[in-house]
Length: 178
Image (cartoon, rainbow, N blue to C red):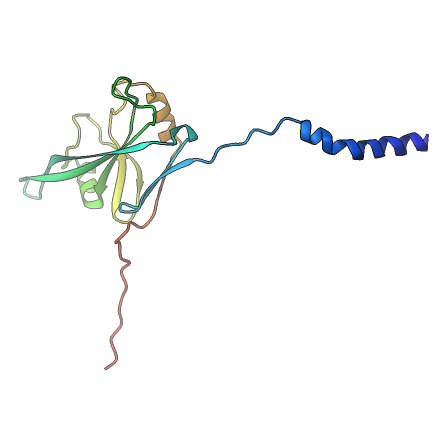
């Protein structure tokens, strides 16, 4: 009996590496795709299917009321992360990111800077010491292919922010020795 047990153990030790090689590989998760914009201090995590994305940049102008309700032209920026399968013949939903300075965002919240005809403001998706990032209201109402995926990506809180390039920390200087 002991001889059988020893033989079984020995056989298991000899054959186990072979079974391990023949076993199917475990499902490996792909590393996420990350869009990083150092100028604005933005990092946006994307699913692996977005590998090969492109960035579309558009500038537009809006009106902001100053403290005397005098309209002032304001230049604004919209970055769109475009899915790699997007084509002219078959467009897909982009991930739009409106970029505001903190001052501009304050005016948006106060309804003094109008950025959309929607009756509600853009949705904030992140901020750093200089900028606020937001998704435009109703951006997905065109119902392009992939809009559900874009909404799911945004619900996953994909934005990470950091100090933008060129942003200097305020350094308090003491009196200089003479």
